[in-house]
Image (tube, rainbow, N blue to C red):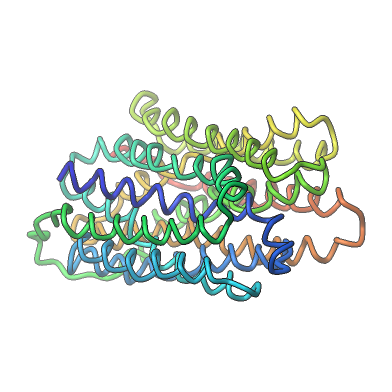
Length: 390
């Protein structure tokens, strides 16, 4: 199982990369195929929405056929296939189609790991293991920053994507060869995702899940690139450095926040505290968008750090889910988390384009203020949740 989890971690590195690399490619794609910020926001949104739409069938597949086949087949067809389509793109809609396929390919990877944790390890260890997988796998976030900018400069973006298609295929084959499916649940109880939706305890948790990853995912996945290019005049390599800083902050937040639930004896108040700080950082970024560069970088890093409570939220929701619905439980929560980013990318593209004539700064101030308001609303709803350390 350790070898299988290691390969799944490599697959999650790819998943993190594919959700974040458009921020670095924004300038070269605009020049080469005419893909502007709204086009890339749409393509990024398709990645997140196809990923989210797959969560319910992935949850069923994890419970019924296991993580091995679920993850290997989808990563091979969607991940490797979508990266190949991206490498051949000549029009903006080709990028959108490629991202749609890649989202499908990446959709089972993290949840396959979480399913194994939920079935093979004690419940009290879930948040720590989930945070460790998320933190280590988020190395893909780092690769999608400055290293990608260098690769694009040295060999070109098409060659970079072709190489990633090959890597995705190799990792998918590795999953097939090394992952072992946990024993099926011994409970004879029947159930479906509708049983989970009938549990009021999950509703406020799904609300915070919907908004938690939304700002950091949207910024790291796309908007950090155009923001620093348009407002602060950054080059592709400089944008790569800034996104590297944000990526490091996101990993540090995941590894530091994840284990705190056991130390503090609470999940609810830990989640509420870090997301509230994230909302404040977004509000400050809206106010000081055109301020000193160091302040903008520091605030965007704060958004990444304090937006990293994803595994603790999963653990909070998982504590209410019966064992025979473990797969569908974690994927339902993930649907809300990833789906929120997809919807936000569509909305943010429209918001940005509607204010494009108002100057370079105002569209981004509106975006950051919008992110802050949505996150604050999610925190307010989450106040009604019940704490659970089970």
